[in-house]
Amino acid sequence: MLGTLFGQEMIAGAGMGLFFVPLNASAFASITNAKLDEASGLMALKRNIGASIGIAVVSWLLVRQVQINWQNLISQLSPFNPALPRSRRQGGARRIAIVS
Image (cartoon, rainbow, N blue to C red; front, side):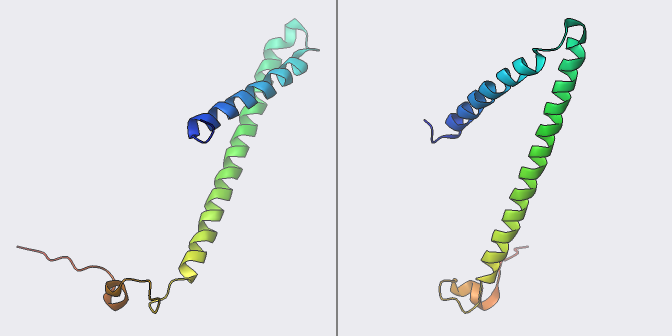
C-alpha cells in the first residue's frame, strides 16, 4: 500500500496534520481571545504564502531537471547509432499517403 500514490498521499497528509496542529497550538497559546481572529488570518496568510513559494520552487526544479535530462538524451542521438531504426536513419519521418 505504501508504494502507491494513495499510500504516499496518506503519509503526507498525516505528516502535515502532525506538524501543523502542534504548530498552531503553540502559536495561539499566548494570544488573547480578542486578537484570535486576526492571528488566525495572519497564520493562514503565512501558510498560503509558504505553500505558494514551495510550489513555485518545486515546479522550477522539475522544469530544470526535465531540460537537463532532455539535453542528455539529445546529446546521445546520432544517425549512425545501430539501435536507431533504419527508416529513421534514411529519411526521418514516416511517409503518409494522401488518397484523394
